[in-house]
Length: 130
Image 1 (cartoon, rainbow, N blue to C red):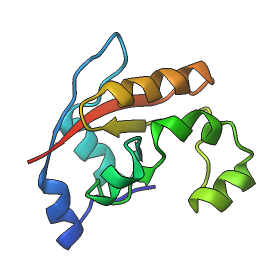
Image 2: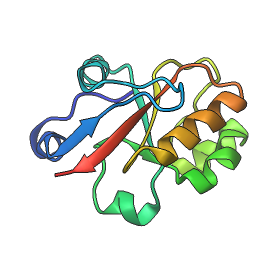
Image 3: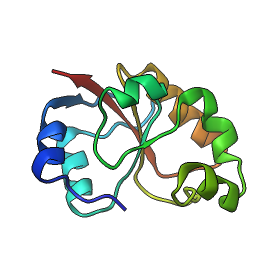
Image 4: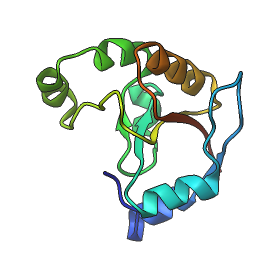
């Protein structure tokens, strides 16, 4: 699980203005909730932006799976997911699986996709660089 970023990574994290909002009935995660979950190591962040967008800056420790790949990624066998993404595949019952993007559209799409596949613990965070 992730830990609250410190040092240089923490500074990069603080340069992001994170605003959560409820969109089309999807659960949203507020900034205080996100900070708390990260501090406790209880959040799994998935950046659903393109690889190019994520390479330009993301929340430290987030896993980048572009929304265009997410459905196939979440349907992979755990060993194949591990081999491709170098981390354990989220389990259907994992809590605090948080998808984020630039403005919220892809985060919402990812959340709905995960819900359709049977994932139960998820939320959306909209991220804007400042």
